[in-house]
Image (cartoon, rainbow, N blue to C red):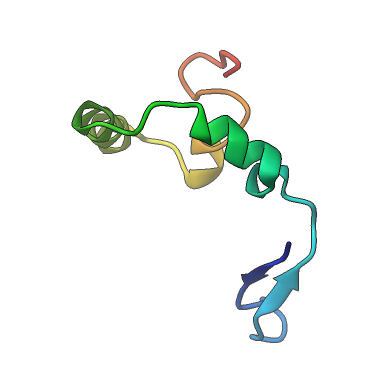
Length: 72
């Protein structure tokens, strides 16, 4: 699987990302299929989290949760 990302900073062209993305394969699909669907409470909780977030995107998606450095 590849993802098209873009634009590349130097050339301005979209780039085919050929890195391995295990979350997009059959194992990730099976893991997500076993989880309950999102609810309105999930949406409200995410809204509250993002509304109060003071960091950048990198800190939001890093391996720590941004609140005291606890691992996910």
